Length: 123
Image (tube, rainbow, N blue to C red; front, side, top):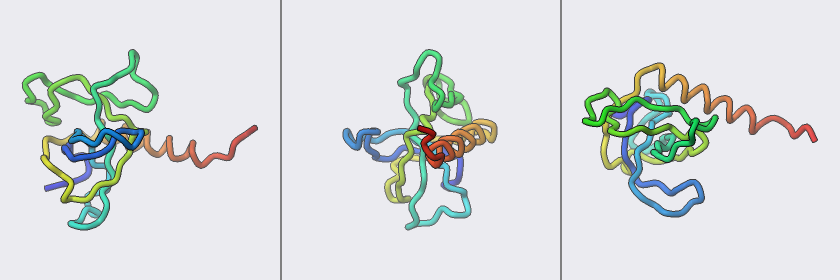
């Protein structure tokens, strides 16, 4: 069952709106709002990580054999500024699930980003 915190794979474009491919994503839409037809908000997962990770990146749990709850197999981050909207039919695979502490960090970062975008320019 698809729910908030699910790690899925679906076809999305890169942040420049190009290079469509099947990518790992974290579902951030509240579970009660997920339906067959409603848009589902997701955040992209990427293995391209800054050193240290950028302010908009939340490191995710992984295990090389995919035995963690997330089912991720390499070091990666949720890129919180890379938000997409999909529908349930776009989902190719449901992989794993994030523990509450990781999901909370992602949701808090999204709120922080949204609040910063709404602030009037001080110049």
